[in-house]
Amino acid sequence: MRRRDFIKIIFGSPAIWPIAVRAQQSAMPVVGFINAGSAQAYARQLAAFLKGLGETGYTDRQNVAVEYRWAEGLNDRLPAMAADLVHRQVAVIAATSTPAALAAMAATKTIPIVFETGTDPVRLGLVANLNRPGGNRTGVSSLVVEITPKRLELLHELLPTTNVMALLVNPADRALAQDQTREVLLAARKLGLELHVLNASSERDLDAVFADLKRLRVGGLVIGAGPVFIGSLNKLAALTVRHAVPAIYLYREFAVAGGLMTYVPDVLDSYRLAGVYTGRVLKGEKPAELPVVQATNFELVINLKTAKALGITVPPSLLALATEMIE
Image (cartoon, rainbow, N blue to C red; front, side):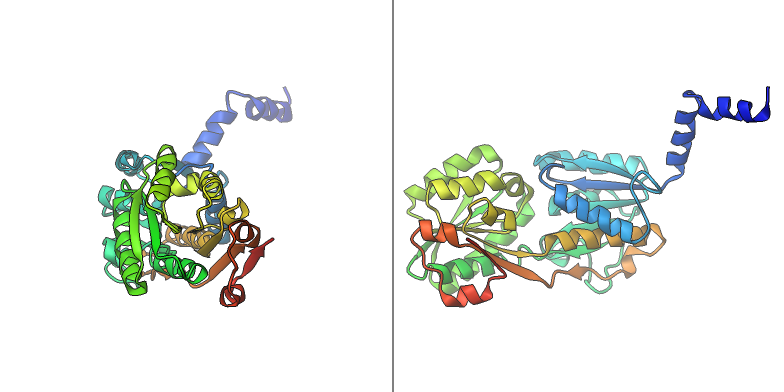
């Protein structure tokens, strides 16, 4: 047998290739990606994360292996998922979403953690300091909690004669719910508004929430942050239209789906930056020395068609602020 034919037989064999592939994969660094939501709801955020990872030279299944863990909105799954990633001794944990970041922090003090959170990471205890985080954690804050009061202010500017508003939060996402409630209650007092805090832990709770809005005669709704509401975005938009509830949310897709208004930081860029930080940690940089990045760009999107259907005239001050108007 000629040497060329021998090589073809050996390396072309189906029995040999899987071994070679597994050996190559085992030599790759492994990133544990953990999120409180679902792969479907967070598809765009994941794509942004992988884009950021690629900017540092890493591509999933080529020179890095990403292990995905999705809690599907069930936060009680996160501690076991984080513990499993620690047991697998991944090189770095990318903990995207606040509940995932807290679960990862509780699971390890040694494996590097890059987080993406919507609230103040110092207040959460994720880092000691924004400029010099210390410990094994750093990441990105999209400031979705910090701008929740701003969303109430924008809704009040749109509806100046409305005195009763509501905030929707997920009580199962305790840290996020508490932070948003505290901040929005303070803002409501300053504006002289009556604020009702309503709870929904899953999409199944939303019909009851909108029945409560009608009973309480709420004139405007601020939808809080969190994976449950991201996964229910289209249903939320449909319910606000069906029940004629002026509402403001975080994501542009809400306004595209018929919701009235969104005010949002550039969350996709936050995920991209989390991917960049993950790649930098893989290259040997220490989380303790990587400053936490905070969102700086914000977008106001107004659905003028929905405003007209609700009988709302958008004031020139908001039209001037809007980065996009849907007609």
